[in-house]
Length: 297
Figure (tube, rainbow, N blue to C red):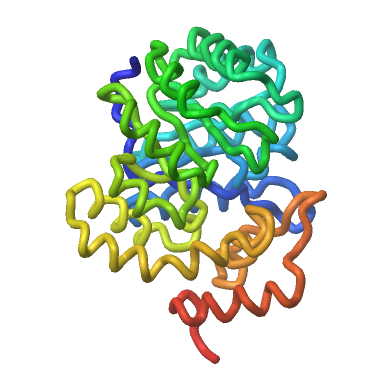
Protein backbone atom coordinates (compact mmCIF):
# COMPACT_ATOMS: atom_id res chain seq x y z
CA UNK A 1 0.00 0.00 0.00
CA UNK A 2 1.27 3.46 -0.91
CA UNK A 3 1.69 5.54 2.23
CA UNK A 4 1.50 9.04 0.70
CA UNK A 5 -1.88 10.71 1.20
CA UNK A 6 -3.50 11.09 -2.20
CA UNK A 7 -6.24 13.55 -1.30
CA UNK A 8 -7.33 17.13 -1.76
CA UNK A 9 -8.15 19.54 -4.56
CA UNK A 10 -6.48 18.33 -7.74
CA UNK A 11 -6.67 20.02 -11.14
CA UNK A 12 -6.47 18.15 -14.42
CA UNK A 13 -4.44 20.95 -15.98
CA UNK A 14 -5.05 22.11 -19.53
CA UNK A 15 -2.05 22.37 -21.83
CA UNK A 16 -1.91 25.92 -23.22
CA UNK A 17 -1.01 26.26 -26.89
CA UNK A 18 0.22 29.07 -29.08
CA UNK A 19 -1.87 30.06 -32.11
CA UNK A 20 0.17 27.71 -34.29
CA UNK A 21 -0.50 24.78 -31.93
CA UNK A 22 2.90 24.72 -30.23
CA UNK A 23 2.94 24.35 -26.45
CA UNK A 24 3.01 27.73 -24.72
CA UNK A 25 5.66 26.95 -22.13
CA UNK A 26 5.61 30.36 -20.46
CA UNK A 27 1.86 30.28 -19.99
CA UNK A 28 2.08 26.74 -18.61
CA UNK A 29 4.37 27.94 -15.82
CA UNK A 30 2.05 30.87 -15.08
CA UNK A 31 -0.91 28.52 -14.71
CA UNK A 32 0.99 26.40 -12.19
CA UNK A 33 1.85 29.43 -10.06
CA UNK A 34 -1.75 30.69 -10.27
CA UNK A 35 -3.10 27.35 -9.07
CA UNK A 36 -0.74 27.35 -6.13
CA UNK A 37 -1.90 30.85 -5.17
CA UNK A 38 -5.54 29.72 -5.35
CA UNK A 39 -5.11 26.71 -3.07
CA UNK A 40 -4.88 23.77 -5.49
CA UNK A 41 -3.14 20.89 -3.69
CA UNK A 42 -2.14 18.71 -6.64
CA UNK A 43 -1.62 19.40 -10.34
CA UNK A 44 -2.14 16.66 -12.91
CA UNK A 45 0.02 17.23 -15.98
CA UNK A 46 -0.80 15.42 -19.22
CA UNK A 47 -4.17 14.00 -18.33
CA UNK A 48 -7.13 13.89 -20.72
CA UNK A 49 -7.81 17.58 -20.07
CA UNK A 50 -4.20 18.33 -20.97
CA UNK A 51 -4.75 16.84 -24.46
CA UNK A 52 -2.21 14.12 -23.77
CA UNK A 53 -3.48 12.11 -26.74
CA UNK A 54 -2.07 14.69 -29.17
CA UNK A 55 1.19 15.49 -27.38
CA UNK A 56 4.32 13.91 -28.78
CA UNK A 57 6.42 11.75 -26.49
CA UNK A 58 8.92 14.61 -26.13
CA UNK A 59 6.20 17.17 -25.43
CA UNK A 60 4.52 14.89 -22.89
CA UNK A 61 7.69 14.57 -20.83
CA UNK A 62 8.59 18.23 -21.20
CA UNK A 63 5.13 19.34 -20.02
CA UNK A 64 5.53 17.21 -16.89
CA UNK A 65 9.09 18.46 -16.29
CA UNK A 66 7.93 22.06 -16.73
CA UNK A 67 5.07 21.67 -14.25
CA UNK A 68 7.37 19.99 -11.74
CA UNK A 69 9.91 22.79 -12.14
CA UNK A 70 7.32 25.54 -11.73
CA UNK A 71 5.56 24.03 -8.70
CA UNK A 72 6.80 25.22 -5.32
CA UNK A 73 4.02 24.02 -3.01
CA UNK A 74 1.59 21.92 -5.03
CA UNK A 75 2.46 18.31 -5.68
CA UNK A 76 2.51 17.01 -9.24
CA UNK A 77 0.89 13.95 -10.77
CA UNK A 78 2.11 12.78 -14.16
CA UNK A 79 -0.47 11.39 -16.55
CA UNK A 80 0.27 8.13 -18.34
CA UNK A 81 -1.41 5.20 -19.99
CA UNK A 82 -1.30 2.79 -22.87
CA UNK A 83 -3.33 -0.17 -24.03
CA UNK A 84 -0.06 -2.08 -24.33
CA UNK A 85 1.11 -3.04 -20.84
CA UNK A 86 4.77 -3.10 -21.91
CA UNK A 87 4.53 0.48 -23.22
CA UNK A 88 2.68 1.55 -20.07
CA UNK A 89 5.47 0.09 -17.91
CA UNK A 90 8.15 1.93 -19.91
CA UNK A 91 6.19 5.16 -19.70
CA UNK A 92 5.62 4.99 -15.96
CA UNK A 93 9.34 4.40 -15.41
CA UNK A 94 10.14 7.54 -17.41
CA UNK A 95 7.52 9.65 -15.67
CA UNK A 96 8.67 8.46 -12.24
CA UNK A 97 12.08 9.94 -13.04
CA UNK A 98 10.68 13.41 -13.88
CA UNK A 99 10.19 14.47 -10.27
CA UNK A 100 6.46 13.76 -9.93
CA UNK A 101 4.90 12.78 -6.62
CA UNK A 102 2.45 10.26 -8.14
CA UNK A 103 1.38 8.83 -11.49
CA UNK A 104 -2.14 8.69 -12.92
CA UNK A 105 -2.51 5.64 -15.16
CA UNK A 106 -5.39 5.42 -17.62
CA UNK A 107 -7.18 2.10 -18.01
CA UNK A 108 -6.35 0.32 -21.27
CA UNK A 109 -8.58 1.48 -24.11
CA UNK A 110 -9.89 -0.15 -27.31
CA UNK A 111 -8.79 -3.74 -26.58
CA UNK A 112 -11.31 -4.10 -23.70
CA UNK A 113 -9.55 -6.49 -21.30
CA UNK A 114 -11.27 -8.74 -18.79
CA UNK A 115 -11.29 -7.96 -15.08
CA UNK A 116 -8.22 -10.16 -14.71
CA UNK A 117 -6.58 -8.25 -17.54
CA UNK A 118 -7.12 -4.95 -15.74
CA UNK A 119 -5.72 -6.42 -12.56
CA UNK A 120 -2.60 -7.80 -14.22
CA UNK A 121 -2.07 -4.60 -16.24
CA UNK A 122 -2.08 -2.28 -13.24
CA UNK A 123 -0.15 -4.72 -11.06
CA UNK A 124 2.67 -4.72 -13.62
CA UNK A 125 2.68 -0.92 -13.75
CA UNK A 126 2.66 -0.59 -9.97
CA UNK A 127 5.71 -2.83 -9.71
CA UNK A 128 7.54 -0.65 -12.24
CA UNK A 129 6.64 2.73 -10.77
CA UNK A 130 8.79 4.48 -8.20
CA UNK A 131 5.83 6.71 -7.31
CA UNK A 132 2.36 5.93 -5.96
CA UNK A 133 -0.05 4.93 -8.70
CA UNK A 134 -3.56 6.27 -9.24
CA UNK A 135 -5.74 3.96 -11.32
CA UNK A 136 -7.99 5.91 -13.71
CA UNK A 137 -11.36 4.35 -14.47
CA UNK A 138 -13.19 6.25 -17.23
CA UNK A 139 -15.39 3.84 -19.21
CA UNK A 140 -16.82 6.61 -21.41
CA UNK A 141 -13.39 7.06 -22.99
CA UNK A 142 -11.83 3.62 -22.75
CA UNK A 143 -14.76 1.40 -23.68
CA UNK A 144 -14.44 -0.75 -20.57
CA UNK A 145 -15.21 -0.49 -16.87
CA UNK A 146 -13.01 -1.60 -13.98
CA UNK A 147 -15.63 -3.13 -11.71
CA UNK A 148 -15.73 -2.67 -7.94
CA UNK A 149 -14.33 -6.10 -7.11
CA UNK A 150 -11.32 -5.50 -9.36
CA UNK A 151 -10.75 -2.04 -7.93
CA UNK A 152 -10.76 -3.53 -4.43
CA UNK A 153 -8.24 -6.18 -5.51
CA UNK A 154 -6.04 -3.43 -6.91
CA UNK A 155 -6.38 -1.44 -3.68
CA UNK A 156 -4.41 -4.19 -1.95
CA UNK A 157 -1.54 -4.10 -4.46
CA UNK A 158 1.62 -2.47 -3.13
CA UNK A 159 2.14 1.04 -4.52
CA UNK A 160 -1.42 1.53 -5.77
CA UNK A 161 -2.71 4.34 -3.59
CA UNK A 162 -5.91 5.59 -5.21
CA UNK A 163 -8.47 5.29 -7.96
CA UNK A 164 -9.86 8.17 -9.98
CA UNK A 165 -13.45 7.07 -10.48
CA UNK A 166 -15.14 8.63 -13.52
CA UNK A 167 -17.65 5.88 -14.25
CA UNK A 168 -20.57 7.86 -12.84
CA UNK A 169 -21.78 4.56 -11.40
CA UNK A 170 -22.66 5.48 -7.82
CA UNK A 171 -23.51 1.94 -6.62
CA UNK A 172 -20.12 0.77 -7.90
CA UNK A 173 -18.36 3.73 -6.28
CA UNK A 174 -20.16 3.11 -2.98
CA UNK A 175 -19.02 -0.51 -3.00
CA UNK A 176 -15.41 0.56 -3.51
CA UNK A 177 -15.67 3.18 -0.75
CA UNK A 178 -17.19 0.67 1.65
CA UNK A 179 -14.56 -1.98 1.02
CA UNK A 180 -11.37 0.01 0.41
CA UNK A 181 -8.51 -0.65 2.84
CA UNK A 182 -7.29 2.07 5.16
CA UNK A 183 -5.06 4.57 3.36
CA UNK A 184 -6.50 3.92 -0.10
CA UNK A 185 -8.18 6.99 -1.64
CA UNK A 186 -11.14 7.17 -3.97
CA UNK A 187 -11.03 10.39 -5.99
CA UNK A 188 -13.90 11.86 -7.95
CA UNK A 189 -13.32 12.01 -11.69
CA UNK A 190 -16.63 13.82 -12.27
CA UNK A 191 -16.81 17.36 -10.91
CA UNK A 192 -20.56 17.26 -10.38
CA UNK A 193 -20.22 14.15 -8.18
CA UNK A 194 -17.44 15.49 -5.96
CA UNK A 195 -19.70 16.52 -3.08
CA UNK A 196 -21.84 13.34 -2.97
CA UNK A 197 -18.77 11.13 -3.38
CA UNK A 198 -16.89 12.93 -0.61
CA UNK A 199 -19.96 12.66 1.61
CA UNK A 200 -19.64 8.89 1.12
CA UNK A 201 -15.91 8.88 1.89
CA UNK A 202 -14.00 9.96 -1.22
CA UNK A 203 -10.91 12.05 -0.50
CA UNK A 204 -10.92 14.66 -3.25
CA UNK A 205 -11.37 15.36 -6.93
CA UNK A 206 -9.27 15.51 -10.06
CA UNK A 207 -11.15 18.46 -11.46
CA UNK A 208 -11.77 20.00 -14.86
CA UNK A 209 -13.68 22.98 -13.45
CA UNK A 210 -10.70 23.89 -11.25
CA UNK A 211 -8.93 25.14 -14.38
CA UNK A 212 -11.44 27.98 -14.37
CA UNK A 213 -12.24 28.55 -10.66
CA UNK A 214 -9.53 26.78 -8.64
CA UNK A 215 -10.22 28.65 -5.42
CA UNK A 216 -13.87 27.65 -5.37
CA UNK A 217 -13.10 23.99 -6.06
CA UNK A 218 -10.38 23.96 -3.39
CA UNK A 219 -12.74 25.45 -0.82
CA UNK A 220 -15.40 22.82 -1.58
CA UNK A 221 -12.91 19.97 -1.19
CA UNK A 222 -11.27 21.37 1.93
CA UNK A 223 -14.67 21.90 3.57
CA UNK A 224 -15.60 18.31 2.84
CA UNK A 225 -12.33 17.02 4.28
CA UNK A 226 -12.96 19.12 7.40
CA UNK A 227 -16.52 17.79 7.78
CA UNK A 228 -18.10 21.21 7.17
CA UNK A 229 -20.93 19.68 5.19
CA UNK A 230 -23.45 22.54 5.15
CA UNK A 231 -20.85 24.95 3.78
CA UNK A 232 -19.64 22.32 1.33
CA UNK A 233 -23.15 21.67 0.04
CA UNK A 234 -23.68 25.38 -0.62
CA UNK A 235 -20.38 25.52 -2.51
CA UNK A 236 -21.42 22.46 -4.51
CA UNK A 237 -24.72 24.07 -5.47
CA UNK A 238 -22.96 27.25 -6.63
CA UNK A 239 -20.51 25.27 -8.74
CA UNK A 240 -22.99 22.83 -10.27
CA UNK A 241 -23.95 24.96 -13.33
CA UNK A 242 -20.25 25.40 -14.14
CA UNK A 243 -19.60 21.68 -13.74
CA UNK A 244 -22.41 20.89 -16.15
CA UNK A 245 -21.22 23.48 -18.68
CA UNK A 246 -17.75 21.95 -18.75
CA UNK A 247 -19.26 18.93 -20.49
CA UNK A 248 -21.43 20.59 -23.13
CA UNK A 249 -19.04 18.88 -25.53
CA UNK A 250 -16.04 16.60 -25.06
CA UNK A 251 -13.55 17.72 -22.44
CA UNK A 252 -11.40 19.85 -22.72
CA UNK A 253 -13.28 21.83 -25.40
CA UNK A 254 -15.66 23.72 -23.06
CA UNK A 255 -13.10 24.45 -20.34
CA UNK A 256 -10.52 25.85 -22.76
CA UNK A 257 -13.23 27.92 -24.47
CA UNK A 258 -14.32 29.20 -21.04
CA UNK A 259 -10.77 30.07 -20.04
CA UNK A 260 -10.19 31.95 -23.27
CA UNK A 261 -13.49 33.82 -22.87
CA UNK A 262 -12.34 34.79 -19.37
CA UNK A 263 -9.05 36.16 -20.74
CA UNK A 264 -6.90 33.29 -19.47
CA UNK A 265 -5.07 32.76 -22.78
CA UNK A 266 -4.79 29.01 -23.16
CA UNK A 267 -5.01 29.02 -26.93
CA UNK A 268 -6.59 26.60 -29.39
CA UNK A 269 -7.03 22.84 -29.49
CA UNK A 270 -5.24 20.24 -31.53
CA UNK A 271 -7.28 18.29 -34.05
CA UNK A 272 -9.40 16.24 -33.92
CA UNK A 273 -10.77 18.60 -31.23
CA UNK A 274 -12.52 21.66 -32.65
CA UNK A 275 -14.12 24.81 -31.17
CA UNK A 276 -17.53 24.67 -29.52
CA UNK A 277 -20.58 24.74 -31.75
CA UNK A 278 -22.09 28.28 -31.73
CA UNK A 279 -25.20 27.20 -29.79
CA UNK A 280 -23.09 25.59 -27.09
CA UNK A 281 -20.80 28.61 -26.99
CA UNK A 282 -23.85 30.79 -26.28
CA UNK A 283 -24.94 28.41 -23.48
CA UNK A 284 -21.44 28.45 -22.01
CA UNK A 285 -21.21 32.24 -22.13
CA UNK A 286 -24.50 32.57 -20.24
CA UNK A 287 -23.39 30.15 -17.53
CA UNK A 288 -20.08 31.99 -17.14
CA UNK A 289 -21.87 35.33 -16.82
CA UNK A 290 -24.40 33.96 -14.32
CA UNK A 291 -21.51 32.54 -12.27
CA UNK A 292 -19.66 35.87 -12.30
CA UNK A 293 -16.75 34.47 -14.28
CA UNK A 294 -17.51 36.89 -17.11
CA UNK A 295 -18.56 40.45 -16.46
CA UNK A 296 -21.04 42.47 -18.46
CA UNK A 297 -24.24 41.67 -20.32
